[in-house]
Length: 205
Image 1: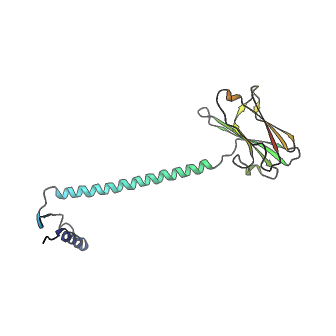
Image 2: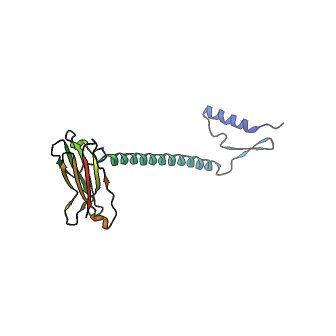
C-alpha cells in the first residue's frame, strides 16, 4: 500500500502556519520517492532562492497595481475629454436679423480660431422665434437651417448674406468660391423648426 505523503506534508505546513512557527520546512527539502518520504539538508542557496521568488512575486503584484492605476487614469482622462468636447463652445461672433413682423430672428453664429498653425472658421444660421433666448439656441438644436465653413464671395464680399423677403420667407446666399480648391460640406434646411419660415438658398461664387 502506497501512502500519499504529499497530503501529510500539506497538513504539516498548515499546522505550522496556524502556530505561527515558520521555517521548519524551509530548512528541509522533502522528497516523495517510490512511496517513501525522504528528507535531506537544504542545499546552499536554497533559502536565498526562496527569498528571490518571494521578491519576484511582490514585484509582480506591484507591477499589476501600477498598470491598473495607469489604466484607470487613462480611462478617467478619456471620459473628461469627452465631456469637455461634448460641451458646445460659445460663438466668437453673433449677428441677429429680425423678421419684418418681429416674430422670428435669423441668427448667424461664427466660431473662429486656431491661429496660423491650425486655423478654423465655422458658421451656423438659426431661425428662432422671438420668444427664444439666444443662449438657448445652438447649432445642434432644431433651429439650425444652415451650417458650413466660412468663405468669401469672388468679389471679397462676406458670406453668407441673409435677407428677409417677407415675414415668413428668408433668403440665404452663400459662397462656393473655396470649393475650387477643396470640397466643402454644407448643411441646408429649407423650412424652420416651426414650419412657418421657408428658406431659399443661393449658392454662387
